[in-house]
Image (cartoon, rainbow, N blue to C red; front, side, top):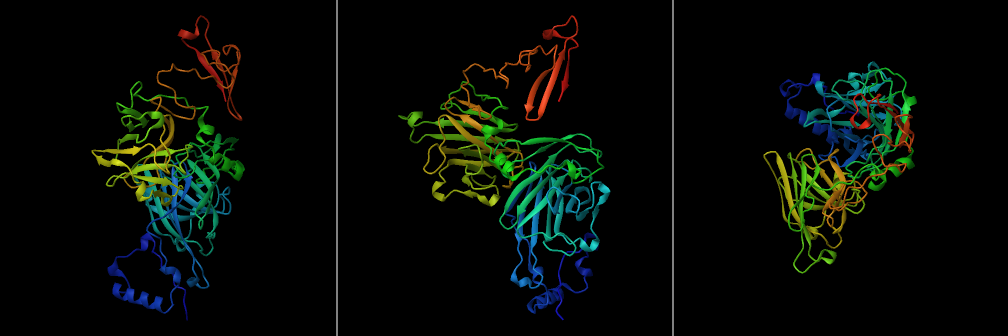
Length: 534
């Protein structure tokens, strides 16, 4: 008879030393070869995960799923099957879970792969309800994952696994589009999630969409308002609009994956698409102020100017103008740039026309190599592509990592054929760095900023850079009143007498009143208080 034999790793508790195998290893190899050659063993057993997982999906702002699909083939015969190979990288320390579900807004009935770092455990679970005691491991016979692991290093939690797409009495994972749920905890003990997301992924096409997300404070008994947000795309340096909505959540029992379904919110595809496509201007023009760099007043064609991109990450640059040239129409002008990072990691500085990652160009340096120019064609690592050899025109390019510090240096022509031009004026720049010296997803270590080379200043946001010699500009509030200690946003009324109001965003109102005790004044007030309502 012909048997369908599937080889899989044994559970941890059943693993044996080679010396205790029933057959000597040489004979086991001969037996396996005989079964395969005579078509007595399922073709599925010859499949394995690739060395590199090239597809990517952002599970939340701090988590990325790297995955590969090994599809079914005609050789599978009457039982076609493929493999989902995954590596979940979470920028934080806690338990993590990835679940297959009928829909992305329905936890109950889903089936999850949950990694518990303290137990070094990656197992399949049934999601039978919202309380933690209803999230139960599947039977031992159904624990068929392989290449599974969970580790924590450098503040990251990384879970890997390989899983058959079709397994008896389990939800089938399609080779096309699927709904998945992701959740993470704020500790290594399985409890109510600190964050969770519902996504739709087309495994074959390598495309994904955010469907629902929730971020909240971890609590066993929850009775609070939770903000639902859409999140930005994977590998993105875009500053995206946050589309927020609030909902009152009834008290529920401890739930490791999701809230009660009545609290779920589905974000329409059109809304999500418009949110993800929002530019920096839409996102932060009214929320971020313009600042200037520390090198205020310096001539950046003579001295190095400096800009602290983020804590522990410094940008230094100088513009080189050849003799006889001027900034307005410069041939051969170049910019000498240094990036100094407190830590050992890959570094990147990008040049964009709209503040978005896709379509931008970047200089990326990995310690042990040489900084080179790349084109950002997409969010997946395989879509971050080297520019052709003839466009690798950087000079004096180097990157070193010594004594816990990484320094990247290069000189780049400001105007090059077929590339984004660096202007004597406002430039949309992007920065990013890794958590180590291997080029991979950057997590939250990225941002967009405006560098004004004409004004020798840098602006965070989209209001444009100001000349460092200009006096500070007062920013008017959304009611046209310049804020002060008492009048505030009250539209002219005295906020010590009546409640003043401020619409923080659509559907989110702030009301406040300042209490000044008798005999006190606002300038030197002892015992002043503020009443606030949200």
